[in-house]
Amino acid sequence: MVSVVITTKNEAKNIEACLKSLQAQTYQPLEIIVVDNGSTDETQALARRYTSQVFDRGPERSAQRNFGLLEQSKGEYGLFLDADMVLSPNLIAEAVKEMEKGSCVALHLPEIVLGKNYWSQVRRFERGFYDGTVIDGARFFKRQDFARIGGFDESFSGPEDWDLDKKFKQLGPIGLLQAPGSACPPELDQLLKDAGVDPGRYGAVVFHNEAEFDLKRYLSKKGYYIESFDRYIAKWGAQDPEVRLQFSAFYRFFGVFLERGKGWRLLAHPVLAAGMYALRFLVGLRFLLRPRS
Image 1 (cartoon, one colour):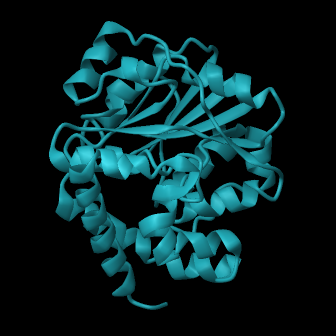
Image 2 (spheres, rainbow, N blue to C red):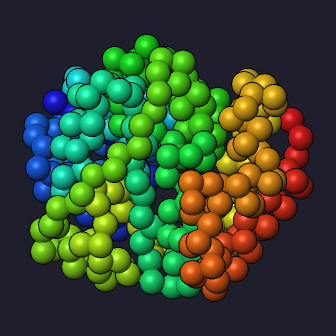
């Protein structure tokens, strides 16, 4: 059994699509756990249409995920999702199959950003460079290994996924799921197409709904995450090889986009590349201007 933990806060617009994509999974059984953080909309009521395991916990997503995965779940495998994510129908089946090979302790899952506007297309373009790199974060793992490493560090709000990867790598390597996709049910297929993406073009992936991308809100969220970066660096050391890459201006502006033969994408999509570098510059500037802890 796979335990899926979804963290929510006022996600009535998104939660049903996420849960319907879990209902459509070719792998069963699934244990679906929704951990809400005091929603004032219909999030909890909608979630209860799909699962009886709906809880109200805070104060942050790391604590919510730990509660769901460490205190409530019973599956052999664990997967955590945001409420605005939709899965390819065979994603969980392919992830279990990959984990059963025994070559890795956790998996990075390819992520496709949804949205039709320019900045959403930029984010989709940018996110495609990060799969399986030190910028990525594992989402699928054996639940006993998650417990063994102590779950998420709840003192972080932003780099907790990088921190989780660092702890998993003390047990073994993290793999990248690379598997063909399968046809979506008509309702989900149409939802994805309405959000600017043809699911038939992709393999087994996580679709992340940023269809209402707002630049100001995006930068504000990044600023909030940046507040935990100095604590993360202090925990693992500024000279740690992966930490150096994660905070290297050269790697974040050039290396991650050129490694593994990906550089051709920049030349093939110059307009998207320009927007991506504009976002990188604004986020980098926010990092440089952060209050020091």
